Length: 612
Image (tube, rainbow, N blue to C red; front, side, top):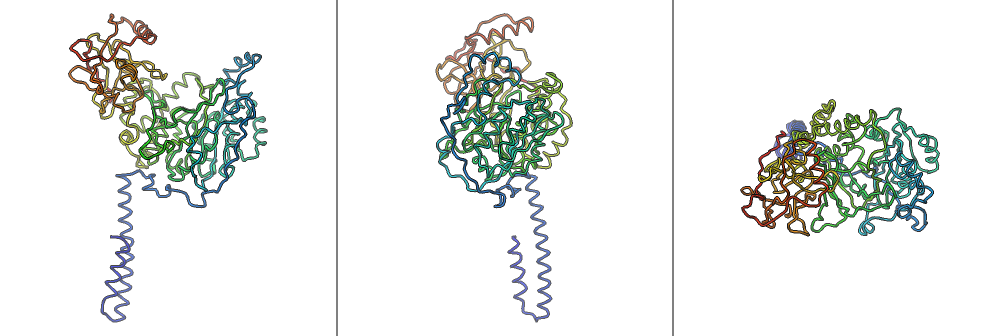
């Protein structure tokens, strides 16, 4: 019964009584006391019920249970002016995102300086700090209405021995392509850089920018994760924007991110990440602006295909993604800290973006990619920054970080990845009790909820038919997924080794046959050819196992071994030699063919992977 009805019923009961004035006063006072008691009682019941709903249903920080995150009050919003358009035809190196051509007399310098930053430093220094970029947004984005009032941001950029030219272009691009009304401050966190030009010379350049830029200089190397946390704690903006020190923002990047957050403050808003070539600094727009993020069987970030446009929606509508890259994103400051910020038990960098993604989704928030916001990022093949302790420490760091978020957020599913990556089993991850307590205190969803509602094609066995090797009974060879880590996958056969890894396949409940993020499917060009492609749930990736035949559901054709037969290798060296040959060959050892009773179409699912 609502409180209003309780009060009305009580009042009517007493006011309608035919009694004398004195008695009526007594009864009226009694009525007031009784109503107050009922008010307290109902509030207590409602509070208890509210806490019960929290524990059974949605997490504490979901907007259902935390109404403050449904939006901002007027005093938290600012009216802003759109920055002026940039000139387009200055003719300077790199302008409009064009590649830089190196003069012949500087080529030797390119090779001598390359290793310091793992990029073409000469090309970077030829480009002006205020280089002009094109407007890479979809036409719909340029014409859409955006709110007049938005929250202010603190932009946090961590650097350690970064090239001064790439760092300055990051800063200047933010200043030139953002409304000054919305940028409350830029915070540079110096993670104990040792390069001299990142001292006084950087400070002199910052002074000339005529905008509030703070430099926080750390007294020891902390790594990206802890350095970002230190910057966030110093920040005073309503929204935090985190950037790597080698990005360039483009026209209209900020407002769409803030609009998404203003609608729901539990949103982590991620721009489309375009590529800036490390050698020429050519700015290349991402072809598919609806590309989603996930993780692979090594627990590393992976691109996992395109989010389809829903009926009645626009191509430019923001959309959910299971994970995000860590180089650029925006998040409400209060929510960032309430949901656990970063795991301070992680070291240097690596895995923090996946951990943040899972934690955000499972604890009441969401990760949303915003197609109307574009940020370019310089991708390097290897990091130029050393790990304290050398290469061994780097390996240990990745195992530690992935091990921490895996054990906290994945539950028993983490053991599947341990079975594929033995280094995770031996890594020292430290005490995770505080993170487990955070998960419990926030009443976060279980990992199974994440698999059912967010990441339906996750590279792990969930509601599956089978996980293990797929063996050709005729040859004793197993299907093997090669090249998946480098994005050039192919399916081959090799002698079964029983160790899982690239011979571990998941026959999912949906009928797909999956290795990491890739699924077996028929080629669209050649009906007999088998490909490995990003899992997308399309019918061309669905299979049936009937008797001992693997049948492609769309065509009714059978998976057929057509490779060479050979003796089983006697040593690991022989096995690796055979594997190298398979990687180099253009012939495929499996194909689709009309089903028959031939032994080449007989397959066995008799090597289950024991992982839980």
